[in-house]
Image (tube, rainbow, N blue to C red; front, side, top):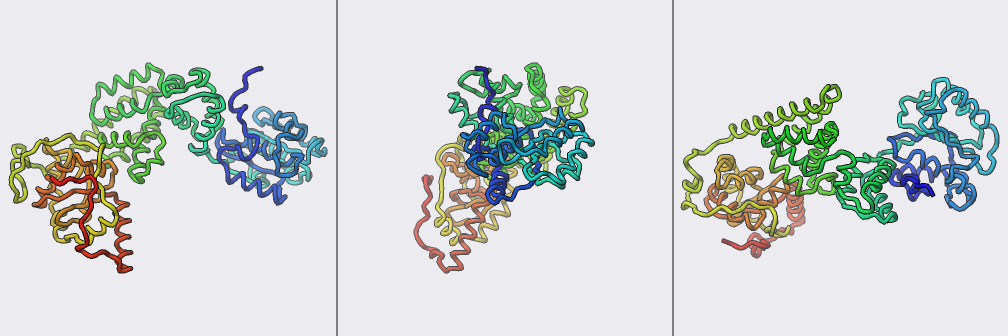
Amino acid sequence: MPYKALYRTYRPFTFEEVAGQQQIIQTLRNALNLNKLSHAYLFTGPRGTGKTTMAKLFAKALNCEQGIGHQCNQCSNCKGINDNAHPDVLEIDAASNNGVDEVRDLIEKVKYSPIKGVYKVYIIDEVHMMTSGAFNALLKTLEEPPAHVIFVLATTDPHKIIPTILSRCQRYDFAKVSTSDIYVRLVEILKKEKVTYEERALQWLIHLADGGVRDALSMLDQIIAYAGNHIEEKHLLDLFGLISITNKIDLLTMIALGENEKLLTQIQGFESAGVDLKRLVDDLIQLLKDVLVYLRTQNQDLLNLLTVDEVNHILELIDYHLVSTLIQWMMHLQTQLKSATSTRTYIEITFLDFSQKMKDMNAKSLQSKPSMPQEVSIFEKPLSPTKPIDFAVGEFVSQGEKISLQDDDVIQVMMTGLKDDKNGLQAKWTMLDGFALDEKVGKFASVLREAMPYVLTKKILILECNLPIHIDKINNVTNQTSMQIIIEQLLGRKVVVYAISRNEAIRLKKYYLNLAQAKKLPDKQEGPIQITNWVST
């Protein structure tokens, strides 16, 4: 038996099996149930999103022997439509049957009653390919169609259809299928095909499909033919001339750090390996988009390509203020490549320019910050009236145990907050810019300066941060000693340093105000603050 492509083997047989397009399905179902049918429908949207499939499912629902709206797939009408052999359901490819003569032949047959079904359904695919004369010939039939005929026109380019045709159709716009819907469909098919896979390989496939289920299944066919019954990320990279996420992050690293020789060698290697360099630029934009989305939402469920750890790694290389700027540069490069005579040369020159721009912007940023005398370390000459500090700076980490506070404990901290002390600390906060240049504590100070004091008591300072990576580092038990001693230089006393996100700060403020309005705030002296995982030093 000849092999049947996956997109044909697993074409949906009922509305329930369709990936995505639920609003369209619900509308068609309602029209079927209420018997409010139009004589002409226009299904439009990107390729591979289910337009022709939906048209055939609609034809089955119109002609199933169990009644309008059913798709039993057991009766002769359903089976005939499934096998593309039903005399009353005709699929016409307008790309090759686009002339006046073909349309006139169709119109001649329209007047005859259905042979087996209730309705004659004409599915005209790629309808935008019809000539002007063919459209005009079809127009008369659309204006006065027989009661037993329904037209379903499918196209990726509705703007190419003449307005008089558009105005006589009910239009349904098919959207790109969501990544989650494609994922569910692929997992279901892989299970049936008894093919195992790496999760990252599946994410790559979904990314390449760009919202098209048919494209996803066609590529899956290729990968299975290449890799067999176990699919790995490297199989997709090899087959489609792609590079791994790690290699792309390495490329961004070279740009950020000005490693120009490595950068040029890497690009040359990509081209020699058959990598599509224009697609590479697009992929870098998608990676940076993931970073920007996470910066703005702090929701890892919205990440398409990167993990949270990979986002944080990129943010250690590229200042978060520069992420959107770099995206704009990349998008401009993407536009310019359309007219470039040598893709590789243009990309090399532009990436070198990016590298220099980032270096200049970072240097300008440092010059604008107050610096400390190079011969004096903050540990040799403290800025606050405390004794000189002498301790070894440990490794700066974000993994491991974190200190934490419950909501009610934060409320108690807010009750005992010292407003004057907090304002004084804020006034000295810019001193952290100078500390950031110190070779011993620069990394710790750089993180602290990205936060701002939220509330301060005699024993604890709560900071408000924008980035999850900074929150993780501040709250890490291993980093606490260093954080506390740096703050001591500004404050004059040692306090626990605890960080929360901007969203948490807003939520807790609302919680505090609600308690105050309900007169349920705790007493200022009520109980000790419980800080999980904190051991006083």
